[in-house]
Length: 149
Length: 428
Image 1 (tube, rainbow over the protein chains, first blue to last red):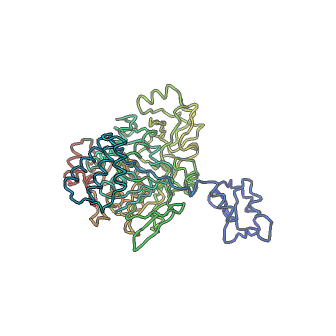
Image 2: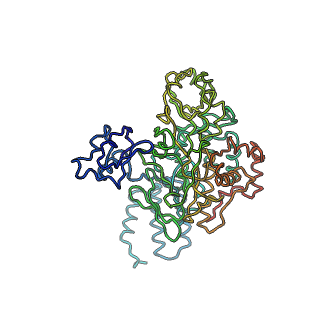
Image 3: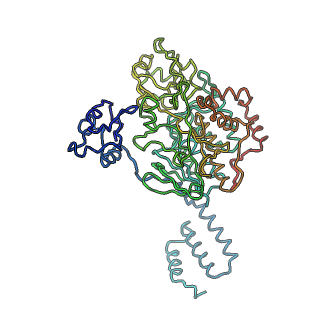
């Protein structure tokens, strides 16, 4: 692999012991089927040694290192989602009204208990009941068992 | 749960996200390679010039006018005329992206940034998932290829003047990948008149702080400024390779045409800085996009998806659609929104098991999609670029009487086709 830093000087082509390097349209390239990474010829790959701009990276490891260093590849994605709509008093009151209507229709005691708790929480969020009152209700439902129904 | 995955977050991808949500897709994901939406739209800005006005208003009547409303709201100048072009709107490139991002999120679509798609998975003749470069697998029921055609560095090097550091930012985020290409579908390339492949983007952007005060004041007042080039700098040959043939008349070679889009849009592919600085008022100018506007511009139109008039990609998995430049040699934001919106809508129709929507040729939008598809199948057709705003396609619009700025006429045409607000209707 010769990176895009190649300045097209041709030094590597002349020095390659196995003639694996040829000119390509805008830079030189190494034929990976011919390149032996200078095994048996030189202690370090010759092209890497002669290249004036360090563009030659014949070994796979050094290529991957370069690819990572030159780019921001493989970073985790940044995911954006719309924020859920803010819970305005009007929205909470609407929810409370709907629960009120449901409560009038429901006869099942378990469901009624769940509805009452949900309503108390909304009333507390809306400031219609005090913290102390809500804490009491919460405590009641914490200990609530369906056997009572 | 119907999940539509859109690969590419440019104008086309954003348009597809909106129509897919409106048509009833439960989940829509927009996967974008870089850190911001809009792609080349980040340096564009020209809307509503010539036939694009007709197309934009048709889209509004079809029920997909939201992005045009956003662009209009971000406009720096309205009703601008410059050589060969009437009633252009120039949006501000600095404020458009957050506005579009907000709209996409408000419609309930997810935006995934820094999410470059490098792999796919198939099952039973359809695409089942795409894989991001970091390994994340994203499953979906239908996919839309709005990856565009700009770059990569090697394409710009081979067919243009090298990497000129444009807004695509390939070295940072990795070059554009093509979903159609990953699916193994053979793609076509646009040709130049001289037989070369691709085309060079047609405009550069200059830094506002580096031009003469007086020139800037006049430009910001009028939106456009036409400065005659010194005689020895006129080069008519350069127009031939331009992607934007609507900006390739002799006037663009004999003059420096500047538009105010937040940056200064210079309507020429590239120009050596030393020459540009010989123009009165631009003595100290520098480039803002591409950074190396001295030597060239980005190359485009390398990988076009084979597709039918419903924008379904042919010759591969049956649940892939395409929009934007992938859908053909269609140049421009308006064109990308037109094709992207249809692709998004038809992806959901496909999931609902319904017949795809094909826009009729009584509408400019439908005629352009059909005409360009047919033209791309011929060698001569591949050497041309098509846009509502000029060149061969605008001539066809004029000849067929499709060009009009009368909103009532446009609404009546859409109503006559039985398609009023079609993009607003849920199909799933």
